[in-house]
Image 1 (cartoon, rainbow, N blue to C red):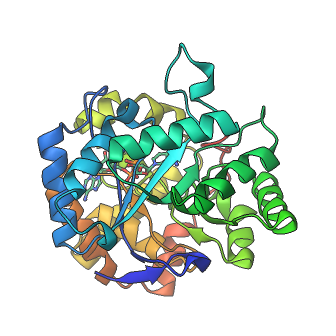
Image 2 (image 1 turned 135 degrees about the vertical axis):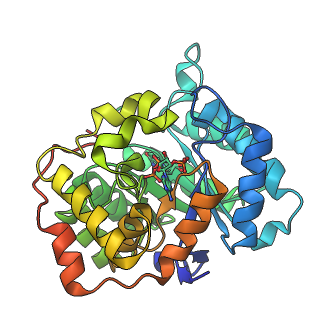
Length: 323
Ligand SMILES: NC(=O)c1ccc[n+]([C@@H]2O[C@H](COP(=O)([O-])OP(=O)(O)OC[C@H]3O[C@@H](n4cnc5c(N)ncnc54)[C@H](OP(=O)(O)O)[C@@H]3O)[C@@H](O)[C@H]2O)c1
C-alpha cells in the first residue's frame, strides 16, 4: 500500500480510500453486513486505513457496519470519515441540512452508530442554501474543540462556495475545512476548471468520489447492464458519462487495458492516481477481487502519451453532483 498526507491535515491515509456507500440495504446492489465486514477486513489486510461513510448511507446502517467491523482493531490505526447534510428522517426537517441543530444532533447520532468517541473527518455532504456558512463552520469548530471530530471536510459544491467557506474559516479563526471530496474521474473532469486548482492553491486534500465513474470505467460501454448495479442504480442514468467523448474514452480504456495486460478498472483508476491534485480516491466495490485490483492499480505507470490518449476525446459535460 502507498500512503500520503491528506492535504494540510498532517494525517496519513492510504492512497485508496474505501467507500462504504455500498454497505447495508435499500438497493439491490448493496452488500449485507457479513459480506461488508469481510470486505472491510480484506481492505485492512491490504493496508487500507481510510474509510468513507455518511449518515445517509443506508440511513445509518453503513456507519453501524463500519463501526462494528473496525471495533476489533486498534481505533488509532484507522481514519474514519463520515458526512452530514442529506435527509435522514422525512418527519424531522432538523435531521438534515447544516444548521447547528442538525450538525450537533447528527454528529452525536453518527458517533453512536460508529461506536466511536471521535470521527477523524467530518464532511459537509453538500452546500446548505438555508443556513449561513458562518453558523455551520462555528458548529463544526465547536465539534473539533469538544473532541467529537478531528478534521473538517466538504464534498461537492461550487468552487465559489468552497472559497467562501475557506475565507470564513480564515477570517474568523475557525477550524479550516481541510479536504474536498468531489466528483472526478476520467469521464467527468469539470472539476479541473475551478475546484481542483483552488484545492491545490489552498493545500486542501482531495479525495474524489465515484473514481471509476460508477462502473462506466470498468467495462465496455455496451456491457454496462451486465451487473446488478449497472441495471438498477438510478443515478447512473442521470450522470452523462457517455455523452460527448465518453464512448471513445471508454474504448480507449479498453485498448490500453489490453495493451498493458490489466483491467479497465485499473486503467481508469491509474489515470486518476496520476493526477497530482488527487490524494486518495474513494473507491466503491462489493467484491474482494475488485478491491484487490484497485490496490494493484497503484503499481501501474501510464506514460504521458497514454494519459493524453485517454484525455483527448473529452468534451465539457453538464455539471453533475452538486447542481
Ligand atoms: N460525497 C458524495 O457526494 C459521494 C457521492 C457518491 C459516492 N461517494 C463515495 O464514493 C464511493 C465510491 O462511489 P461509487 O461506488 O459511486 O463509485 P465507483 O468507485 O466509481 O464505482 C463503483 C462501481 O464500479 C465497479 N467496480 C469497482 N471495481 C471494479 C473492477 N475492478 N472491475 C469491475 N467493476 C468494478 C463496482 O462494482 P463491484 O461492486 O462489482 O465491484 C461498482 O459498480 C462511495 O462508496 C462513497 O463513499 C460520495
